[in-house]
Image 1 (tube, rainbow, N blue to C red):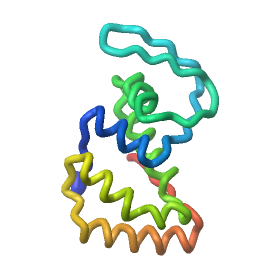
Image 2: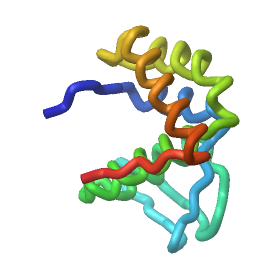
Image 3: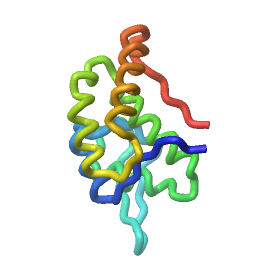
Length: 130
């Protein structure tokens, strides 16, 4: 059962990723896909992906929903840090304005308090996908 969700269009997803400063990713193998639906040319190695590149990267795994889910979980985990807690309110406002979601302000405040407790105890949070 899915209790909470965030859904966005492609352009809004890209705006969210750009707003949070991009996502650090390590691409195992260089990607060179050129089809009518997708052109993705992404070099191998560590890089900060913009919203456009991140969307293309996720799309390269279109037939692997578990891989896509893990990439999104990795993105969330990367931004859930003690240093980013000061930005949490602005992140929430921006994301909620750019996405369709059933996460209320109260839900967000509860999650933020929970994350603060976890982060200050451990220094970071691990997000997993089943």
